[in-house]
Image (cartoon, rainbow, N blue to C red; front, side):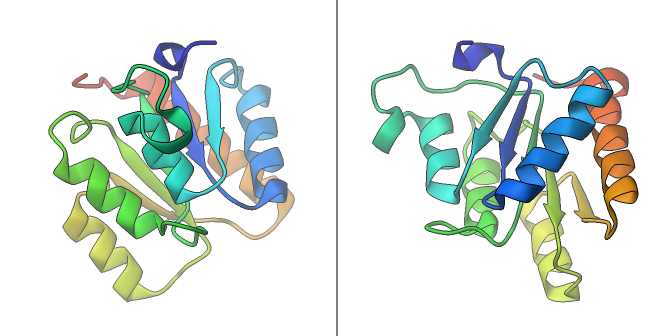
Length: 146
């Protein structure tokens, strides 16, 4: 799969959460074009062809970014800030999927331009259902600008 084929960029450092999200997307037939970035630096490399992504063409346009806030190397908030401040990536929908229920995180995310803020549900079945619904909405119902 080329980076241009990516429909969902999943930015998540917890392998268990990645596995559950991929399972939920697969159950809804939405997992064919998912790319996983394990930290914020990897996500930025993906978008801007820097670091590990320096040898490929920049500016892929996934249909949606599922972004955790608590990430190693570069925080999810910093990734969001960079994506929404760059003309090439500003219109890509970003959905924060986080365990943080802190109001300051939600307020800051919306100030930076996040399209949706979702607290990861506790419990396997609720988690699977929520991720499936998020995927269905952003890939099938929402009409992207890009």
